[in-house]
Amino acid sequence: MNLNTTFLLSGGAGKLLCAIPALEKFHRLNPNDNFKVLVPGWEEIFLSHPLLQPRIINTNSISIFETSIKQNKIKQPEPYLVYGYYNQQLSIIEAFDEVINNTNDHSDLAKPNLYLSSLEQLSAKRVITELKEQYNKSKVIIVQPFGSGTYNYFNFLWDTSNRSLTSETYLQILQLLPKNCLVIFFGSLEIKPKEDTISVDLSKFNPDLRMYMSLISECDYFIGCDSVGQHIAYSFQKPGSIFLGATSEKNVTYPNHFRIIRKANQKPIYSPMGISLPESSLTDRLNDGIMNFSREETVEFCSVISKDLASLSK
Image 1: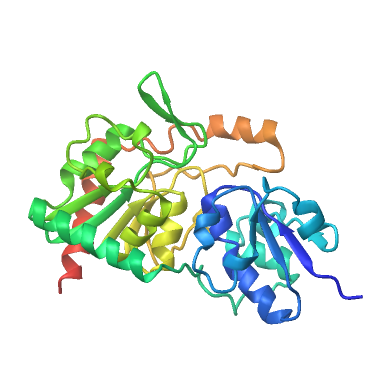
Image 2 (image 1 turned 30 degrees about the vertical axis):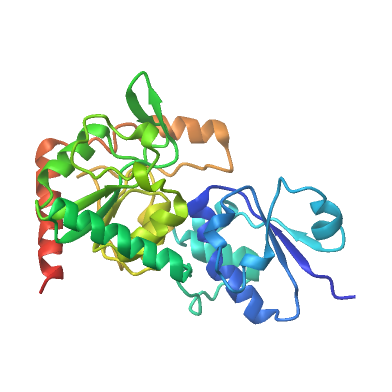
């Protein structure tokens, strides 16, 4: 008897998004497998996806064992456990392909495909048009300075995984970006620095992840760190710059598409997250400060970003 498959995924929004190419490939290779995908949240990533939307189930749903697991083969693909990944030889998309499709040939992988509804696209165009007119700006930059591991520690923003910009660097970037650019902050308003008086206020639009996806699809440039925003920007083929700290560009981003910015003369030490929690915590200590850019460094890379933006109008 040929059993269908249930994929049990774990992780945050960016990690789940990176499983999309391998899941699409699984369908191409196994067209008769009516597979399901169980996720711990972030189902909105898969909305409007013609293949995956009907197959996504939240792990907190009632009766999933009887309806989606008991009669199926369970696979729990974990890219962090793949040799090529933890030796910085594979991207997370390629590692998902290896464990889901049991292959070392990744030449046929697509980019992560995200889909927006017509209403979402129209709404994003309306919001951006309104804001550009309100602030008299000609270009739109979306900035995600902080990853999901950032928390507010007595009004001091801290990311133990060393993947996020410091609030000081973020505020300096805002001051140095071209004045003709409308800047949109992507992230929880709880960690948006109160000193940020430059990025526009989106609160009246009640932004959620789907709205940020649609806004990124309409922006001119993306600036981010190792978090979900860069994967969204890549899906929509938006140019941008990605600041990396404790993670490898081979693993987590798209160096052939984005400009990668690192602190000079500091190479990250790989953190074996998902393999050894104690060793991962020790590695975080060794990577401490890897995202602490100086004022001089900030001025230098903002000059390069400004040249990128100027070239967009040519």
